[in-house]
Length: 305
Image 1: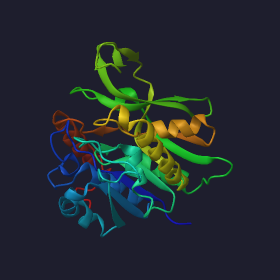
Image 2: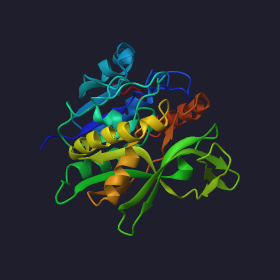
Image 3: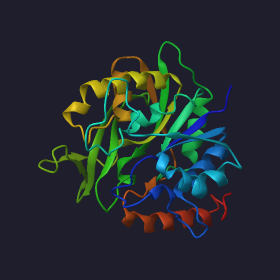
């Protein structure tokens, strides 16, 4: 069996952060969060890394990340471009925003033929999460249903003090399988927990801090790629016209549809590690401090590559 592949979503514009945060160093050795993610994946046994990037960022990405990593694991690049739309559709005038995470994963269909994991480039997930994903991907196969998995995190461990975040809010059954996932694009910390809004702050719905959430860390068989092809086609036919400048095809929403149709199961795996990331520039000092502590505790060497 082929070793699993790690697919890294790195085509985001970084608009809230104010720059290309995926290649922003988080220690004095020039490492980025993505370096620690790949280091953990190599240590867990993954055999290839696929970077989903914008073509215009390729030179910077290769120089800052890919060239060093390629000495330790096979590397491929895939480009999520605005003009990559289904046949018969056009880019709406004024559109600059990428088409979303489901569209991004679909861009990998020509280079990913083996079981694979998906992560965000700017999130730190922790060593145990990759070990859990590797174990799942090497011991599960599709049968009468697609057999997928995700790593769940406690909402309270994934919030920032510096603004709102987007999270996939999860409902699981007693056996630990995902029953429902709802993409909440604006969640904030509150005085007594957390809350989300779907109407630009006119109303807020409370969320307990122990709510399990998806941080876009998934385990898939290649079957998801065909399903996303159908989903993206449907998205362009039914959704883009409603909000031509900002609509996105979200991976968690498409997984939720597969769950509700009975075509797939998603086992919720759990990481023993704390998540952290850099949604906003103000988040960076905490990330730098956290990485330094992990090194001091012996989780990582001072120089990774």
